[in-house]
Length: 319
Image (tube, rainbow, N blue to C red; front, side, top):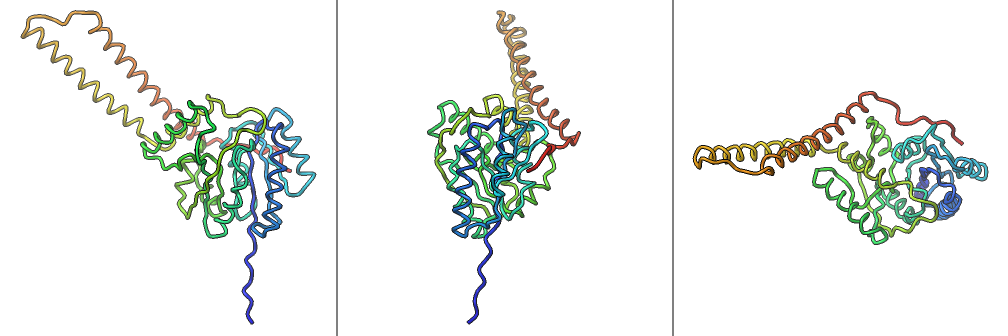
């Protein structure tokens, strides 16, 4: 009787960017290690699968803990960047250096439910190339953060950016998808917008987001705003077109005002009195000009950074 050969389980790599995560890292490593062992025993992934921590220029004992983990088990690997290069670049350093048939990226704070990684792997084993981890709701966020985050996703959609709603950087990607991602050479990578551009077969898994296990968030309002601006300017020229439309409307409004003034002077033999009628338009036009220059400056700055073609990161050490 002919026996059908059993497919070899895929080699999985879990990439975890870390920045000053010494408080949470031991627990993160323990939970991910236990999860990986369970998936290996269940035959979902190969025993050669690894967990790769990327130290993004931490100032605490994060790298020392990663070295200790690498010594304790071959399951754990580490990549140390020469300096802090930001979350997106740390992710890229991890996924581009990881071995395996598929790579999962997840933050170190344990807010994302690691158990859905098994569902991601099931989708991958079924032929899916990219699997997105998406939050079921934002009830754990403050009203301000929930409103601004959801408003931002809707704004990008309105501007024509292809985003997965409520998806951050918790995802699985196949080796083929990663090879295609490497073809994107821009310095400022906004992965949430680039990944959907790859195409391929995709799937979505939903999960409930928890509170941070320990430590403080490494994404304050300043960094969130910078990421938001980067997402808009990297994928949409709508702000530039908005400036053109605004300029046209202001010119049309000015012509109407000129007509009103001339009518009052020539026909009614009078003028429009008052300080406000002359000074307020000046302030209004000045504000429009400054806003327009600021938006143009964001795009010029991005062109400037991209034209220099500087490396995204340097790897100082691996374990």
